[in-house]
Length: 129
Image (tube, rainbow, N blue to C red):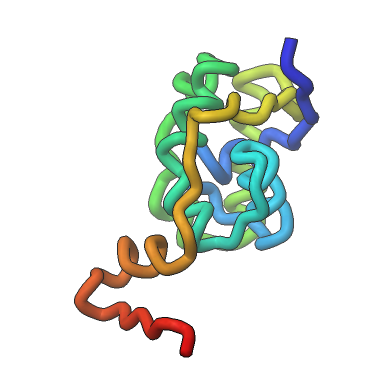
């Protein structure tokens, strides 16, 4: 059995349902899942792989409805209320999360991430002199 770490369901939903969250837990869960230090840009690149892996571990996350736009753009209280509803729906407040197995996700370098997000025509790579 792989090593797991407990994460608050709110943090897990930040990955699976893009529930807005503070930067520290956001970067922390992505670093745990990928086994590599993470930045918000790298996390965005890893999102699809992380969502698939979390759904494999916890299929009931698939029962959680999409995050309503009004909640995503609303107040912290609205987000907390929605997360509390999902905790009640699933009957849990935390979930054990295992990191992805080696080889399941290969993190790109920051240059590749920037090129993916901004478009290669907008990223200039200057070689070291």
